[in-house]
Image (cartoon, rainbow, N blue to C red; front, top):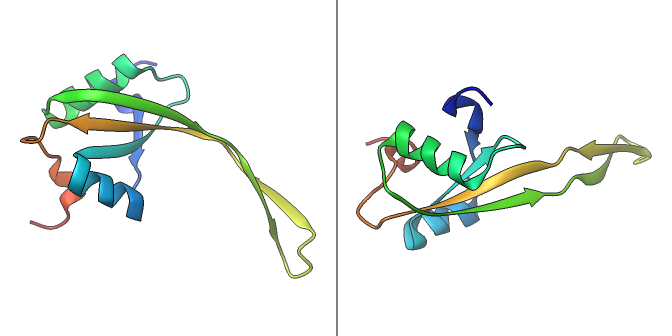
Amino acid sequence: MSTIYDILRRPLVTEKSNYQLGKLHQYVFEVAPDATRTQVKEAVNKLFDVDVLKVNIINVPAKRSRRGRSRRWGIRKSMYKKAIVTLSPEDRIPFFEGVE
């Protein structure tokens, strides 16, 4: 892992993450598979200039599903690691807020 830009891959925006954003001041990111809590905390601190209170990391398992007309073709979505970052109540990341 060379830079902080390699640690945070993309934000995850779902209904649940929008609820966490509004009520709990938590932001959800997909992170690199070998990222640690301290690396994620430092990356968010430097990139967005905010105070990070807590970082929870979850390994989301791979899932199988079926595709095609006959439903016989099985595909596999790969696993990924996501981080739930809790900020102090006065901080916010404008990237998630939409158009201002």
